[in-house]
Length: 389
Image 1 (tube, rainbow, N blue to C red):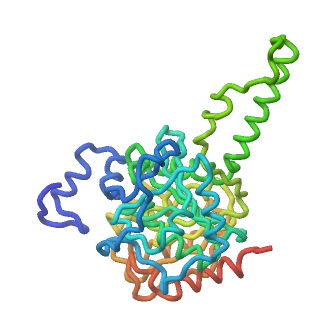
Image 2 (image 1 turned 180 degrees about the vertical axis):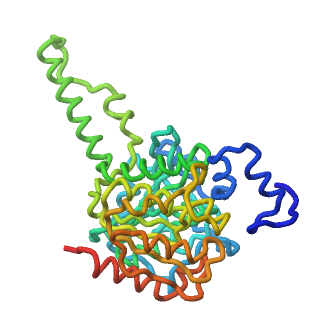
Image 3 (image 1 turned 90 degrees about the horizontal axis):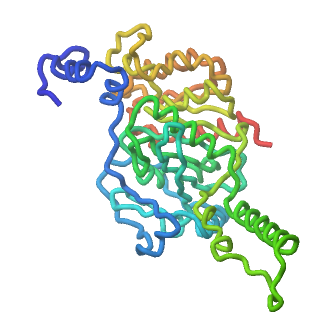
């Protein structure tokens, strides 16, 4: 990064040269401006690796670099913890291991209840996914696209606290190049990442059903062919299923799968996460959309006086929001020092189905969750303004 010099619109001349001249490619410029993947704070162990490491320990609190937690702290219900723990402990399920920097706020029981697995994007990146079953009886699941400079390990405590308070399950994922997700952060990868997360949440069923169904079909097929085409030896008293088929290893690592319908999915994007959220919502209808500190476009963040979208502008959410047909709740702090409040206001004004927004007086970019009206507005929106029958 170049040394600072005379500044223009918040950037020095040297920084502008670094952004736009090495190389002068919009996607590279966007990556330099927008993406700050942290050092991973967690690992995901596949079934065959689970016996190789000791159980995860609930780590001690870390320095205050994590997203704020809704206050006061509250433990999830017995029903939620038991249901999620049963799913996570199933054969073939991956396990989550957190580092101390994840700042885990709950007990080992809640950690065991967090389901993690891998998916694959259309751009062939491995995608780390997480399902937090906070409210098994709830109608809605949040597809949460988190903010910058955090990963799923740092966010999972927040997800448990948020989901248990607003009575929603939460499904989230790490962008390419974040956490355990492979690849590099880019605008195209953002859109491919949320597409893969959407498909994983929508179309899948729990893997044991597949495992048992395939085993059953194999047994029927082997039995049929053995009796109809292959004479039994005189000393044969039973058919033996090959060990490989009995283990059904080809299906042993299929991740947990959920089958949530679009009318039960709420898309939630925070900061940079509003970019893939708006893109997906402009192409698919869902129950609702929540935009937390949204940005109009990358160029408008860097240069606030920009009044139109240029061909090289990245993250042009302002041009996509008019295509969103679902109800949209916009949340923004009036003193946001990263993405100016004017971005939230402009996005709200362009929404065809915007509901009453939440403008948090005095809040910045990273502390909206600490204000009481944050949870109050979410509860009101989900419990009273959306269908719950």
